[in-house]
Length: 526
Image 1 (cartoon, helix red, strand yellow):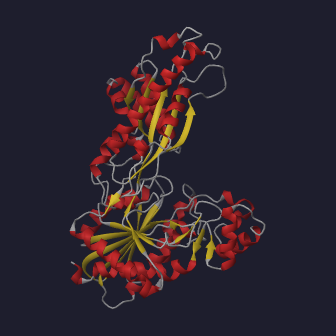
Image 2 (cartoon, rainbow, N blue to C red):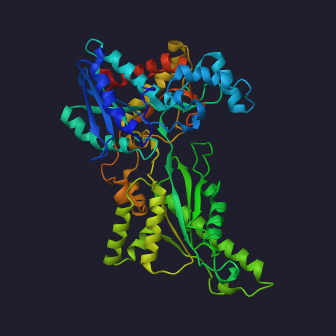
């Protein structure tokens, strides 16, 4: 699977689904399995790959993971070896002999010890898929095993999770058609650990959520020789960025531990070329992680911080010029209003809405979602006929909601199975495994797990590209099935040093997954 290239957005990703389905159909172990593909969307070209193995009864566990990878150009001269693990590992080991950067030194040590294997997508995350298939093979070869296993491999996790979103939406119909009772989902994503592996040998009982709040700033442009005659949108956006960076107000607690602070992901002005006019517009997006906090609360806090940052900037600008200059435009601007995208949209009459929809449809191609949202927001501002300065807030990308195992019986059963298997791991597999409350990375768990689907509404209303580019319903959008993550561990994924801890991945991991499945599916578990 690693040698089969499947970089997100390439022909390789589109070809991988049919290739994997054909491979599964040819496997002797799966000769009695049902294998099929599901196209992500009309004319999309990418497919989810599904395989159902029947035992006895209706109880079913879903094993799922993504098969797309990030690109390989960062390997430089070693790019031809990027998906050939053995050859790449040998080449990297040799190239790192004189390394002096800490990450490279650690990688050289890892390769010298023989416990790690390199390869693009090997860690993130084709080994997880392989472990799931190993469990499926053992299940298929068992005599009348309890329950059923459903395996689904999806594309696009590295971009907008279109594969997982499609799979989550079709699960209810799939289970009804095939008379399955889906009890649990095991996601197979990788975990990074730069230490001894203790943080990587983990069963994660939930996942962190991710939002991309965006601030589109409209200033008052002026010739830069007369800066007091305007208000610089870039300066306002910079003030917002400085206020929100690591802001405790947007840092959600991870249980009793502090969470990950917010951080600026992108900032740019709206100018298309050089001139001496100050920027009229600027746009900033921020990474905000959450564990329990709903998108509505995140956006409320974000709005307040934007307003606070703008107010402080106005005060500071007045202080700087009041003693020596006429304050110019500042005399007229007492505050900078903050509008949400949905309130901006509500101002538009039907003709303007139709014009905006035409713009949205015209840019629904390959541009990144944040850029689409920026362009649509700026167009909505033009159509609103409002005057700057102002700040328009909203979201700029797909929402990843946090998931947690609930108190419902199925979730409690899954939690108990995970804890039991982790507690017994040292004795059974010779490897200490622990349970963690949250998977630290962004993952497809957000679409399969138990999450507050109602919170998608505020995101949809304030994500400008939602209708034409996200294409995600607000009801039955999530599977809402108890979900955990059990995957391989390694280091430095998404870099040329991406490497997998072989012993855990090839030996311990399949046994963990198998035993959790067995505990959930055994008749007395219900």
